[in-house]
Image (tube, rainbow, N blue to C red; front, side, top):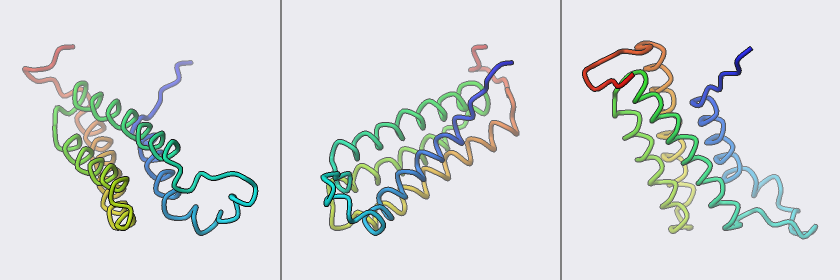
Length: 130
């Protein structure tokens, strides 16, 4: 039995996990510093989550583009959302206002990629190399 990973679903899950961390964790887990645990606004954790979203999203969208639909739209939407995600790290006073479009754009890119992959299912064109 061959295990097949749905990279779009994994990308959406990673993006939602990041959004939940950024939006809800400060409200629900404000007592963590009492125990010496600080992942709220922890730069290493934030960068790790951003890099995880970048790696999964890039692989998923590149695979969909190259093997299935040959549309640049999901990649453009993803990197637009990713730009908001990176800007959120530098403009901390506007982090929530930057997080909302980031999450919406990244999830939209994955959904478009997922639907396009299912509709086209190996739509071969002149630039197709397989």
